Amino acid sequence: MDKHNSSELLNSDYSVSKNASSDSLDSDSKSSSLNSKHGQDSAHGLGDIQLLDGEKVMSVSRDVTYLCPYNGPSHGVLKVTNYQLHFRPTDATSLQTTLSVSLGVVSRIEKVGGASSKGENSYGIEVFCKDMRNLRFAHRQENHSRRGIFEKLQQLAFPLSHRLPLFAFSYSESFPEDGWNVYEPFVELRRMGVNNDMWRITRINDKYEICDSYPAVWAVPAAANDDLLRSVAAYRSRGRIPVLAWIHPSSQATITRCSQPLVGVSGKRSREDERYIQLIMDANAQAHKLFIMDARPSANAIANKAKGGGYESEDAYQNAELVFLDIHNIHVMRESLRKLKELCFPQIDQTRWFSGIEASCWLKHIKCILAGAVRIVDKVENHKTSVLVHCSDGWDRTAQLTALAMLMLDPYYRTLRGFQVLIEKEWLSFGHKFQLRIGHGDERHSDADRSPVFVQWVDCVWQLQQQFPTAFEFTERLLITIVDHLYSCRFGTFLFNTERERVKEEVKAKTVSLWSYINSRQNLYLNPLYWGPSSFSTNSPPSPYSRPQMVLVPVASLRIIKLWKALYCRWNPTMRQQDPIYQRTRELVALRAQLEAAAAAAAGDHAARQHRLGLTPPRVASPHHV
Image 1: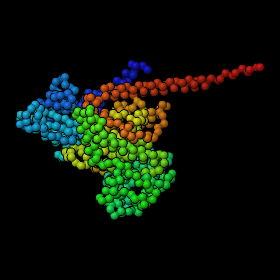
Image 2: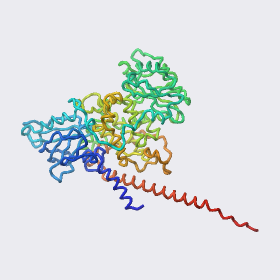
Image 3: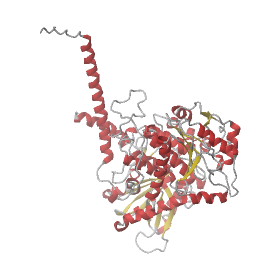
Image 4: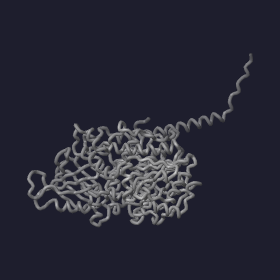
């Protein structure tokens, strides 16, 4: 391979990388992407700050000290725009303390000290972030110097609490591809073979009247008429009836998802719901049994009866087996991540690192989710049996399990574009409450609805990548970029709670999709070790070097599961990888492309040579006389 040509190819890729938004995290850099210049491809400069299209500087404080927990105090200028908080040190030797933090990541802002506080740097503000870090700035005590910047931060970090629009509605960058077209429900259902004899597509929820948190388009058993669907909706929490998530291409075993039945303490039954579950079972001719995977611990499911919920009785649902997966609720997960944050930021206590991770129970929860998904995969793939998945309302743990099981079963979802479809389908269209769980633009940081459910699922995907490094078309860089923009409010993708709300707010018309941004620089996220077919080469023949994709069955054991330090510990320089892994990954992607092109050219030359030789009549062998 010509090293010069390889460098040229890499340089062309690097020009994209250099201009990429900082929000696409590069953990190799001394200050990760949120700490570096962002959006330079579309940004216009104002002094030392790079502004995105639609971004404006709203406040400037010139005599501020950033109290970096790793590099010590740094004097500089603090600017607040309608998108980010930006700090730049005045001393050129302290540039490593430059900060660029999207305001969407801010959880709360507090004043530190008062006018009479003693000691250096005792007066200022502290910014608590959703991404595992806190930022503290010291101000001069004279003339209430922090007041203006504090008030502006409160207003711009929590725009919805101050009746202002989120930044996504001001951001106007254009990209070659419209990411809102990545997921089309009819296209995805056709990819899975629906409509067919056993399943049909319905638009009964077209106006979101049956279930306001479900998508407009469902796939349901072909034998279920609309009246039956309405009756079932009345018996399921929030009207979230069992609908198709995924169907096995050969066995026709299915994964369906829903919410808990409204059993209550009286043990109420619904003949229509029981008949409907039987239709789901009958749609799979390979098995005469259905597994109902209830994500909750059994004690929680029983307790929900007192609130009017509950679970399916095996006496009422013939040939159905109920399994509890022991995944805890959103409040337990929120507390677990809080403990993990205390362990990872700002300083790491080496003497209690492992005991602290264990005490947080974060990895234990990751294990439970992975183990639950593995059980679903086993029933569908090995036993050819359909599985119905639910928790309480069917928008948190249910989404974790169905999306993870589908990722293990279907290699399409392990491609860059397929992964986007999976998130759009299982998380966004089926009503995971992103607004409530993340708190976009909302100052109520202690709201009981906040929980890292989606981040926890992304962590599970990362665990799969660690166990199957050649099975994914993308690297962890894509996952970290998605997590960052989950908070940033730069794109409209994760805004609001339901598809109905996004339609009402005209999100597709008024905001930019995260997938537009990612697909415009896909080379930054490609995995050079991936051996499957690419989701971006549909018009070209598959690579002869692609290997058959298989079902992934990870080991869900604490012996194997690891802490994702590149996400949770990325702000600590002592925990950061020392080698520039993202740069080397891009080099490998470029080199692989060159090698495949050279191999294809050589194969073409060989075929042409064989063809020419084939046109020449073969020599007739002389008869052999004895």
